[in-house]
Length: 296
Ligand code: GUN
Image (cartoon, rainbow, N blue to C red; front, side):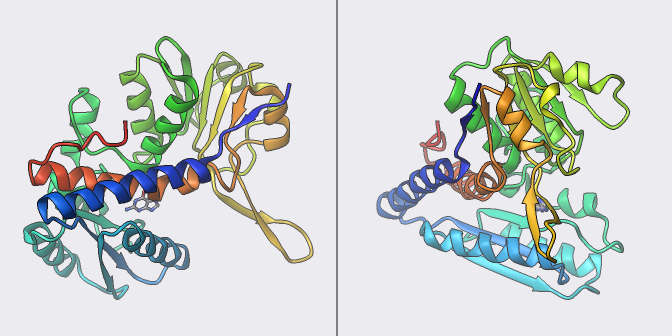
């Protein structure tokens, strides 16, 4: 069997088009320009790349981008004061504080300081609680991107056995919650799970989000299952070169699966596209404008 490749790059481009046309409509009909503020503390190279890419794509879809770059020694107090300003600023509809933060800053304190309606990451405890009880919330971008691809490929997900490998607050837990809300039977597996291979073999849908290069081999995949690979791991490729690989062994998993997301070009591009979509959603809700369901 040769798996269908779920093209996240192409899917993300269609999401960005929908975002751009909704942004144009908000401007024309309501004179509102959605705005996204991104806060970066320190100089982590990977975070700098992500933040630059977020700013560029925000502008490309016609929204306002506000970047706040703070030194690595920035105090918690100064960071919280900036968030207060952004919470109160009517031109800002989405606020994202890039993680990880330096160790002297309490990430939970910062995340929970963002106004829940502007929390485009969906990390605030109010949004976590709303998602967990099936109520309208801001949904974390990476799991939202995975869900959109799964819905597009399968239509209904009702009754499917889904196994999420990884229990992070950013991906694993919200992904499991979203799949449960779609009426999947959901298992969250993690580093202490016994007989992981057997657990994964029962899955119609596997979402791998562990951050360990190529840890899922093809013989764990039920023939015909759908594999969503959230991992983005940089590994040695010999000749002092590096390459990106996912959390699943692509060649062997693609041989068993019915559908699979590649790395790169799968989940990765969907994350920023969903951030842009969440900013439009937040903007519509804050301004009581209908059409926040433009993605569906
Ligand atoms: N760092 C890695 N992924 C994310 C994300 O989705 N949101 C934020 N704020 N920081 C991150």
